[in-house]
Amino acid sequence: MNHPIYLNLVSLIFGVFGMCFVAWLFSEDRRVIPWRVIIWGIGLQLVLGAAVFLFPLTRVFLDWFNNLLNVVFEAADRGARFVFGNAIVPDPNNPPDVALGYIFAFRALPTVIFFSGLMALLDNLGLIKPVVNFFGEIFYRTMRLSGAEALSGSANIFVGIEAAIVVKPFLAKMTRSELCAILACCFGTAASSVLAIYVSFLRPVFPNILGHLVSASIIAIPACFVLSKIMVPEVDKPLTMGGIPKEADFKDADQNDDNDDKLEAVGGELMKRTSPLDAAILGALDGVKMSVSIAAVLILILGLVYLLDALFAGLAMLPVLGAVFQYVTLDNITGVLFYPLTLMTGVSWDDSWQAAVIVGSRLFKTAIPAYGALAAAAQAGEISDRTVLIVSYALSGFAHVASVGIFVGGTIALIPSRRKEISELGWKAMFIGTLACMMIASIAGFMDTGNPSILGIPAEEAAAIVEPAPDAPANTSEAAIPPDASNQTEPTNSIGEDTEPN
Image: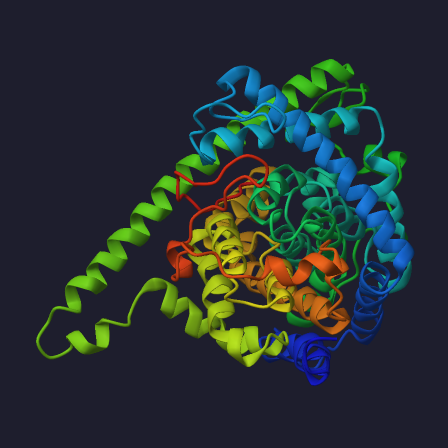
């Protein structure tokens, strides 16, 4: 172990249990403490974390799974290369004479389109539902959640707001606590379709990042349930307290559905069962909408952030207060807000401020720029492997302002009769999702042994990877997207921002 052992204890005591205490401070009824949910929820996180970090066989499986999914991303690159050409999407085995560098719009967004279509295809073939039902049963039987919220929560491993569609017939009659839990799971996890963007940033310094992001989505579900049930405790009796809803339950609950044809979620909408090819095409088209939304929100948010920072820069020129505003930027403001929570996760003191700035930047900029800044800091050798690991988990959810409109608006569209209540719960759910991301980051910090293989780095190469890059940016808020590991030497585009509508 190349870090002090007390940091692991900080991660457990102040990170895992500390996040529960923070949630309790903001609880709607501090007299109601869901001990069963807390004990089993934290226990599940520790078991899942131990399986990922401590068991060699699990790491072997994680490496295999990571390599398998890397083939999927290579397939996405192959399609994008045909459309945009080898100069924009270079072939590792046949690099172009002139490489244009990593251009976000042409390298990251096409993967979202491909992955969205692939997930729709797998769902149509019936390969996703058994996994969702498996985890739903675990969450229901251990934490004694309602069947509907357990099923919807487990669906968040793969999708975002579409998880609410899974239990659409029950939404209108759900309790306030159930609705908050479903929303919190949306904020605390990342849809599989955007994982490719994060992977493209971190793969050069964190080869196993994809497997860890998948495990983070699984571990985050019990974390969201624990914190949600503390902050908005269950005081009513849910309709589906008897177990995971079966197909007959859905038919009985949906009183307005006069169509006997089986419906399924395709491209985020309920429609009649389609052929596998139809599902894949509709999923890809949904990925196009998502990619355009990502690009649009990035342009808007980064422009607004630039204007705000320009305002602070102008105030810094004032004769009296200028000295104060020289240090006031949006990144520094959010860094201060997130500094206590970041320390609680168990990052080292030396890395704590930089880690807090990166984690805090997600609040307004979303996670894409934050992952870009994290990759740049890691390549420059400015932060340790432990910090890279912890922050990677802390950034893995959709807990940012841009997602409030997406999740709240999407849920209201499904049950307009609960509009006022959902609007009130939206900001609470985002806060719960934020705490859940910090909690699973603490789980990663507690389980971290300092073994480079956790990141997927061979021991003999670990020292070389942390060598500072000569031209790496010093400011994480201006970090460039890391160049493609296989064939680029100079990034020509410094877009590192994110927005991830699910």
